[in-house]
Image (cartoon, helix red, strand yellow):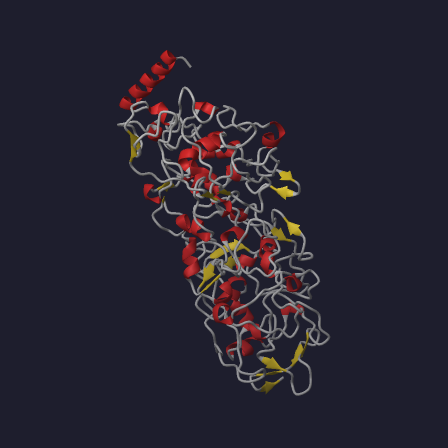
Length: 602
């Protein structure tokens, strides 16, 4: 560069500094826009020199940092990072931005005296987007195929690009122009509204690479990509207006993210809570899902020994947690506007993984039926536990599979009888109490038509859910009723098997406030009291005994030589006992049973 040309550059830089130039906060000159300013007017000379700089790249003048950086690590990423090459683009940026070299340490004309403060990134960059990858870049299901194939991003303008085949700071940032994106004034190379920079590298269409499905698939049609809710500036996300415009930035942060895993703005559920707590961050506010977790019974949150990890197995062995990401895929979930018939999974759970009900082991990704997602934890997984103080009384069924918390045997097609969750109703017997429509939570208004199948959430649901007539969140987030039941359901209990039942409900209220409101959702309890299916129903119920004394709620988890098992007749061995030395028995053909209950032999 000639002396005259360089003088022209200096003059232009000085003129821009006086008029508000595009360098923005990179203008370190006296009177410039940066919080850190020097006494020299030539803005370019704080980074560049025409001769004898310490690095030939970009005629760089600032002394380079020799820091060693701790960079992003993920057990799901196909690419790993290396230390940035000294003098490469990222190294130039970090010569100021890691904070180890004072701004203005320019040779040969510096150092320049500087004043002011700013917030450097530091050298602990585990929670910042990966850069300086090991080359060649490896293909992955969440990356656009062209990155590995020919070193090109999906950005048709060419603004988002690889540098010498690698991701560097300048792949996303244009250091000479702070205002390419006027709403997000972060030296971006492209207007990043609706995640344009992110999707230049991250694929949003379905892809499978090395057996791995794309976790970002379905983004374009998702609830978050389409949400027009206004974001309150106090949320501190930046300059866009709506959730859809913020796109990836609504949940992720490229630099110094609150949660290093997946670059989330906050750790785990806290990232979701920011919007789904009914607060003022959004207008209109999103449904207050987290109000459900404040109720008496709720799905357990992450603990220090049971956290969600993107790379964990779908079948959750020895890992008790129920985070948002276990049941919802934030990249693919869509708003629920209608409630199709079971067993299809709700669109709010689009893209989540599940386990097949046929063997309890085969991964179904994505889950097609709602129960497949539930079977991640409630099937063959090991380490399942229950806490009666939180989840309520748990019956001990006379006929049960070895693992009483595995719901697959009770619901299986081989079960003598079951509620129709895994398969259509197959009972050859009439069901006179069965309603034409399920009742809404008011116990009066007809809800969804009764089909041949039901969902897990027809029984386990928020007690104020939208699907059945109120305004709360759908799904088993939390409830005031034990076992995360949608409605009240009382279990008979006894101090000793066969002894006095301690919680009788004689001549019970059959309405929505009564002890068997959950059963009354699908079964006309007046029909049950009329003995239309069993001649002794009225006597047992009016004497105060719960349905759970004689009926299992899921199905027959095993076979028995003494209990025939039709009409899900089983017995709670915590309430009933053998009649003297005769085993507890039931014969549907004879319509008779043998047992002792409430100090009375049958």
